[in-house]
Length: 352
Image (cartoon, rainbow, N blue to C red; front, side, top):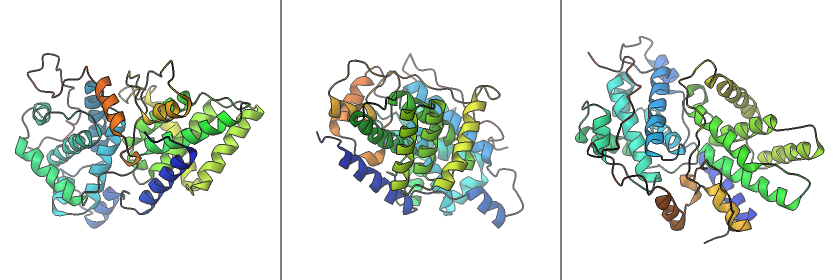
């Protein structure tokens, strides 16, 4: 297995930055574009709340089957980019909430199939839709989304940027024993903010690197003191994001938005997702630390996600499968333990 040296991590970061700068995996404000082209809003046209509701639903499904929450961000990226294409099927989805729900469910199915070690049975989607859609409906939508995206389904995620940036910071700490930081704690806090950001339409157009940097910055400020070591850490972080040309102006705006999301999620909006404690510990951050320092005796209760752009090895896939041994190979109605999450996308999503 290849060791994740500083050179390897830097190379991965540069590749991911090139990917997002190419705009292939970027999203546009498609709701604004649609409103400008069609001022008269139809009753079935989707809105920001539709997207937020479907994001929450995806998290419910992912949490139930104990997969990585990063998979939801991948799924929503598929959905958002598909709606930006302006193809005939995407236009139909924009104007029909029943179609939008189908597209969101299909995008989640695709993200699981591509990024998780275990594939769910499509019959689970049929059951979750309460029979509203058939297998043929999901298959056709999957084909339409793939062709709409030109089969580009392996873009960088904010979570992958967080893992790589913190890994570089961890290496610097190992060389400077005077700077001591709990990197797993920073990873947990940053990951939670990223999870909240997925359902926030305002952050739709922000690059994953910007969301990642903003989430780390907020997490650092929460745990920063006035000590010299903390100031040194913060300066090193700012130098690092500058070296990868991550847009500082966008970071400030995103940072404020993430701060608001985090501090209102539990207080005034109890239905927002909560910080997840998960037993799966095979994420890339732990893998990199084990390769650099040897096996650790203790693992964090929360997983750090692995990006599709991070070239996950077969060994890691095997580890993930072992850790998911309690998850059935297919999730169907016949599974006695199955208790599907309720659909949260009912607000005006039913066609009369």
